[in-house]
Length: 212
Ligand SMILES: [Zn+2]
Image (cartoon, rainbow, N blue to C red; front, side, top):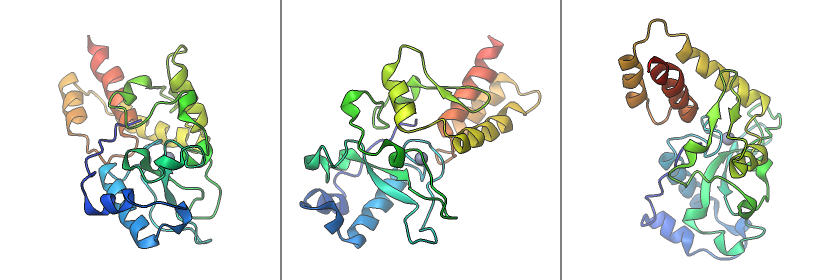
């Protein structure tokens, strides 16, 4: 999970959004889409939870492939429906081919983070998670909030795990990498790289710390 810094509070679109009241479904599409664009940019076009690239557009059934996700669900926290600090972009309910996607916001549904959750708006969120070479996301056995997040977001979904494994392979396959090379890779890794936190973790653990 990668930290998302919220810096657009004073943007006129966000101000307009925050003044909105009433039913979420009545939010005009043009405003919703403008908010989505702002959120996508501040997240470097990655899903707030799984860090895969946010898919663009709609699937063949006309369902958007990404959505505005309320960290505190609208069903329980109506007053937070239009809070800029409660919204992030998550990958959506379906894939482009119409098959169901079952992780991130769609799997979390109305889960209340008050029961334990690591938020991507926490500057230290990434420290709660580790990754195995097989692409699995893990945490310390005693870290209940992290495990709740992994389970409620279904972050060990097979497709996600396979994608992480592929990314890890790219970095662990580099031959004769020096510690300095790994440090440079780490520092220069573009923020919009899919599975950014996984790569940073692998670089630190398997390429830098290994030499000490
Ligand atoms: Zn996702």
